[in-house]
Amino acid sequence: MELTTEPPAGPTAEAATAPTTAPTTAPATVPATVPATVPATAPATAPATVPTTAPATAPTAGLAVALGQERSVPGDLAANLTAATRLVAVAAARGARVLALPELYACGYDPDAIRADPDGRSLTEPPAGTEPPPGSPLAPLAEAAAEHGVWVLLGAAVATRGRPANAVLVIDPYGRARGHYGKAHLWHGERDAFDPGTGLVMIEDGGIRLGLGICYDAGFPELTRAYARAGAHAVLFSSAFAHGPTEYRYGVYHPARAVENTVSTLVVNAVGDIAGERYFGRSGAWGPDGHRLTGCADGRDDLRVVTVSAAATTTAREELPYLTDLRTDLLGQAPPPPLTRIRLTG
Image 1 (cartoon, helix red, strand yellow):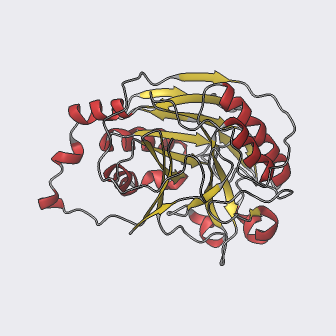
Image 2 (cartoon, rainbow, N blue to C red):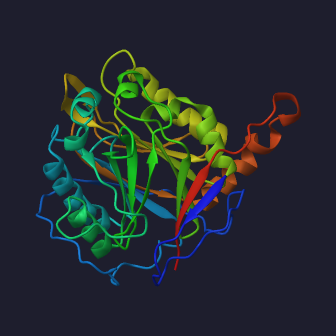
Image 3 (tube, rainbow, N blue to C red):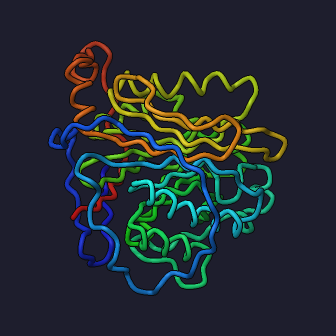
């Protein structure tokens, strides 16, 4: 099953068809990386109408994604959303069209605390295609997205009819909530705090398609393969990997998922001390041939921008035809999972 979300009438929103192969029309670019430091400012509240100042389309050379590696204040939604709001301006100043934040960034990664107080640590998601109402926790962040013309991919606990979702909440460059991706594969204690997600989510802007995943999802080749077969150029994982015995897997999952599917993989990882764990950061990106493109600092706040290029994906698939050479007659092929496409074009 495949769904397309379309916001209420706006100058650049349109319904998407469902292509099954990656596009080849974007001009070639060399993926770019730009380091950044991050100053702080106070946000304003969001207007009630759709802003008209956001840039209409992403740069035609590709989709520039900022990996916002930023510490969370455990349990302090207001402080974390304020920090996310200022990071929108930082990302935009460095040429990014998308700002991605770590897993459960809005409240800090602490499943036990979320299980004990789901209402106090979860966000209420506005109806898809609408702006957060003025005065609501998400309103300043949405206003910043609209002011700077930036997608925001916010790691957050999102309230649902059951337990919260461990989610990536999507805000588009016009400040509209567009739905969320719920983590499909829950890790250990997360299963007591969250309900698992029920489908995949992919955003598209300027002809570039970006699939969404969260942390442990990267350990399942099938998820990234499903996005590749649906036409993704990249898959982005919002994560919370900490120092310890599982740390080595961080450097295994992401380049492997990239090269075996000929998609770029991006990961924005948590950093700092939360609930007795020390998160190491090291957010990064790998190209569709598995080579590392950029990496954030170890153990401190950082922001890097990487450009996802359709041309790079096409070149990699010409040289590494894994998707077309796969012996589905021998090994079989899973049916496509439920997929929601979130599209914004000019």
